Length: 205
Image (cartoon, rainbow, N blue to C red; front, side, top):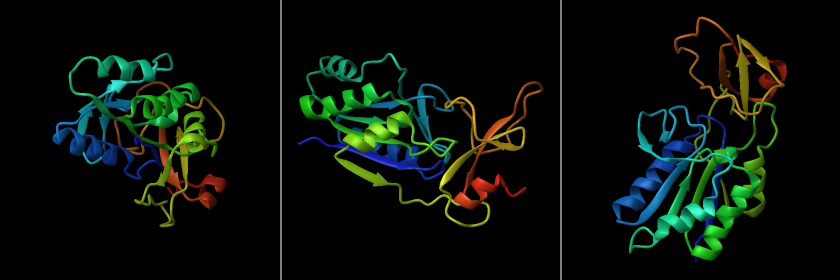
């Protein structure tokens, strides 16, 4: 029986690294599968902060994931065996239901990875739905840390050096604030914080 497994954590907890490892391990056994992502830092690929990357199908809100699996399953005499879905917090609730149908109707394993909460401390739509329907719910074992040394539980959005608590849910940024800064416009990055320092708006600088 195929399984829908959802692994979740904060930024920096190793989600993309594990997703790439699972994809590599299964593909190296000559199993057919697809690697998917949404809003990755580098576009249509899954990238890890450890420096590894692989090409991936980019998921937009209009993409039917069940039809995608059907189409790819028909392209080869070998059956489609798995989907590895990174950045699954950005998938729509409908797309998460489509992943469940891929598991139940096509007997294809789905390994989904995503953030549990957004910069406001609220569940993403995709995360909420996956927590509701997944066969397995797996917290990431790598504990990201706040600047104070405590376990990081919040992904804080920092705009021009200040934590913000309102705004668009999806604004692509990174936890590395040492990147070249734009000459114009807002500078956005993310800080991993414990609950206390998230509430205080203290990024430790």
